[in-house]
Length: 182
Image (cartoon, rainbow, N blue to C red; front, side):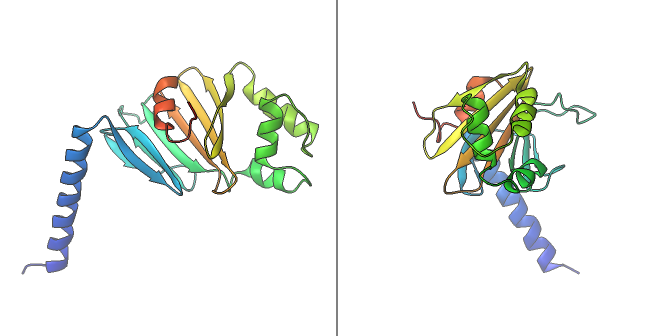
């Protein structure tokens, strides 16, 4: 006997995959929405999923047999639940935004403790790091080997983190083009 609900589900999945495939092949990027943000991610990921940290969306552009960190990928996640963020919020006059501003700009104007600033400076040691001029957000990046992390800090929307593996600085800037001021 024909299961109508199952048939409709299969038809919708095939139609959605067809639309996404056609769109992906006709452009160099796909518009990816996460929370209140829109990114121009490279087209044609081979897999999309969520794993590891909660609220993480990952696009894989190549896969190896062991799904290792050597795969080319783009991950986007909220930083609101991060343990560091929770610890910082417990300090008066301190937040992740203020800590990043202190450390990246070598200004120690916030209420963040010297211990947190020292710890974050140690995390940045040996990495290319800095800020990109942003529109609507502050962009703090760090690069080591084939990994790039960018924190997007906004006054109006939740703060998020972009992490990439095996992408160039130019590719990451293209993903963030809606938010980088020229």
